[in-house]
Image (cartoon, rainbow, N blue to C red; front, side, top):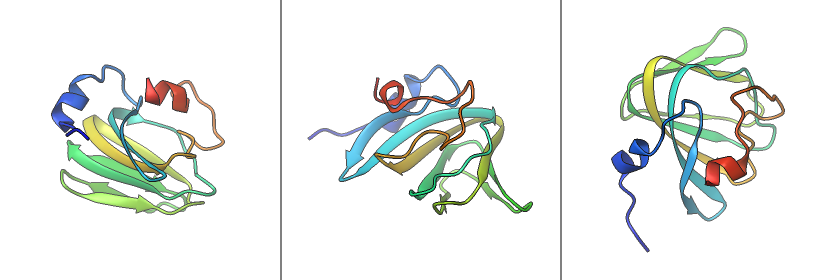
Length: 121
């Protein structure tokens, strides 16, 4: 057992939208990512996804025009099957909690999509 320092974990991230697995709790990965700009509209058919903001601000757009704004210390759970698009106007640091089976951008493949192997690396 060891402790994880989130600031140190974020220091090791050089690329936006490239989550890195920093822990595992049962069947959930704990991931950290730096984000800026837009990811891609996508959904996860079988898994919920938690976004928590550590630094900056994240806007999560939802199908139909709804959105939520997350500031440091706030989190949002996106339920399975909900189409969403994370957006950050400026650099934002986030923690993600996702089932180990969650694909980065669901069934959508974009230049930003990262495999689980890349996220574990």
